[in-house]
Amino acid sequence: MSARIAILVSGRGSNLQAILDAIASGALPAQIVGVFSDKPGAVGLQRVEPELRWSADPKAFPSREAFDAALGDAIAERSPDWVVCAGYLRILGESFVQRFRGRLLNIHPSLLPRHRGLHTHARCLAAGETEHGASVHFVIPELDAGTVIAQARVPVLPGDDADRLAARVLEVEHPLLVAVLRLAVEGRLAERGTTVFIDGHGLFTPLLLDSAGALRAPGSGSA
Ligand SMILES: Nc1nc2c(c(=O)[nH]1)N[C@@H](CN(C=O)c1ccc(C(=O)N[C@@H](CCC(=O)O)C(=O)O)cc1)CN2
Ligand SMILES: NCC(=O)N[C@@H]1O[C@H](COP(=O)([O-])[O-])[C@@H](O)[C@H]1O
Image 1 (tube, rainbow, N blue to C red):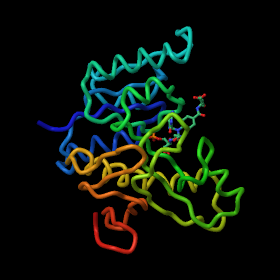
Image 2: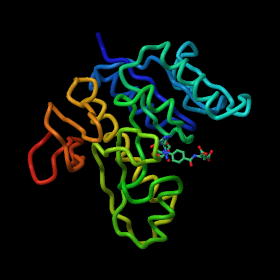
Image 3: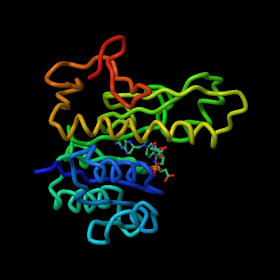
Image 4: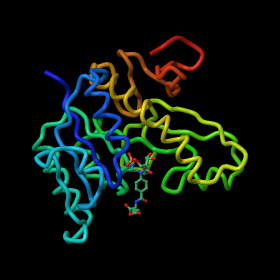
């Protein structure tokens, strides 16, 4: 029985497409059980069949908590093994996070803990940094503060603007997210408290994506 993954998107869904492509190629033994969005017009929703789409406008709800509860109910109905924020641009409330804690992941376009929040590429450039990248982490109520599982690094190049840097980061986001999800669906990834475990061993430094798309513990062999 392949692992069941629910995906949250707010926009174009290029990370979702990378997951769909990995599933189609056999590289990721999983199935997408639903794509959920806070934007009914999100292009990402169009990447799956209508029966797998769920969306609602948060403005139609009396509170953030009410929206999160409806979103959480819709996700829970699909009995996912993993819930992945892939370009999802809303802060999830504590009740939602606790409901899916330990199987709720996010891909973030920075080398956390640098640049939590939004507009990470512009902030990286403004800070004069020479390196940027992406992180996949477990989601906790505090924004982008969950334990980081893996990262992918890219250089900041002369003449970069935010769009050019974002495109370079996005190129590594896709294999990074797929590689982490492969660990997840193979039952090798877990979070207990604030510690990440790979194959039962505590992970105290994020894994790094290498040029071949493999995850390696810094300074050692592949994960
Ligand atoms: N409780 C958590 N919720 C979410 C997390 C998290 O780590 N903890 N990760 C995010 C994804 N994310 C960055 O990776 C992120 C999403 C949204 C925002 C944000 O400021 N959103 C604003 C609205 C912004 C807008 O609509 O343009 C908001 O929700 O008020 C920052 C970072 C997923 N959720
Ligand atoms: N804070 C969350 C965030 O900024 N997520 C970012 O949204 C972009 C679009 O993703 P997509 O092409 O998969 O929709 C991606 O770069 C993703 O890291």
